[in-house]
Image (cartoon, rainbow, N blue to C red; front, side):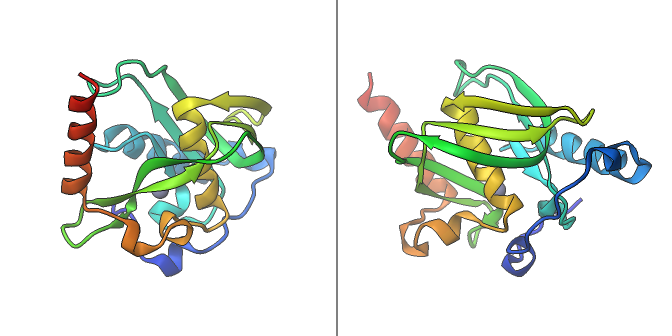
Length: 182
Ligand SMILES: [Zn+2]
């Protein structure tokens, strides 16, 4: 399965779903596919259906602790109609990349994108149950990114292209940061 990188496709608004639609075979298949890809990717923390060319409001979020981020809590959930209802405090610049926004080397480019540290989000789970919850930290960050995909917004719409660095440079910056903290 190829990840979509065409901005024209990514700029489409995804269609919101009714809970009844979720039990259809086609939808179940699409959800399973999204979860599979999200879990397999090197940057696999979240993937929205538009990123595989399907403009429907389904997002797989698959967060688990990694060697670089051992403090992360597991969040493994399909979010339908994911929406940021409210942001708390001021937005702060957070480093972020997207597998749909690659540089010349084919790897994601990164920039500091203004994001809230905590947000209130609404979504339906796979069973169609409505959720309305306050989330914070890394999960809040990922959810803001994915909710943007649902309305057809990508990170190069939020920050000027000149602010972005290559994947290589990003890893160097992160390493320098780690060394500063020691
Ligand atoms: Zn993305």
